[in-house]
Length: 88
Image (cartoon, rainbow, N blue to C red; front, side):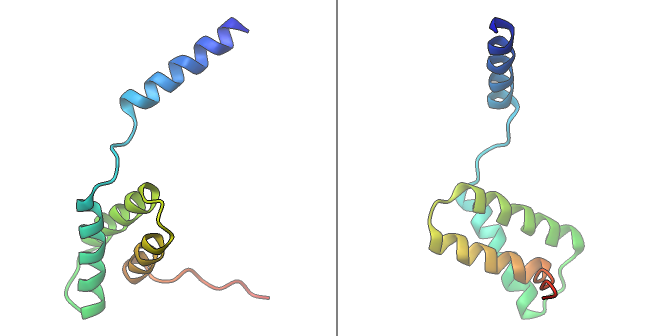
């Protein structure tokens, strides 16, 4: 029992030390900027699209606002495309 607690505590500590950095306002700006460029028809490389998508995902994970999540998800759809609709 003590071993399990020690393992969990060590895992939590490693997660805090090596975990991903929190999303920032810069992620939101990258997400929306990339989506705007894609929808305007500007030349956007795959690397830029991937960076924009990753920024959208970090910002989505960070925000608690339903409205912001909606806008970030719509921007991510503009970058990566809509997911296929399931056949009913």
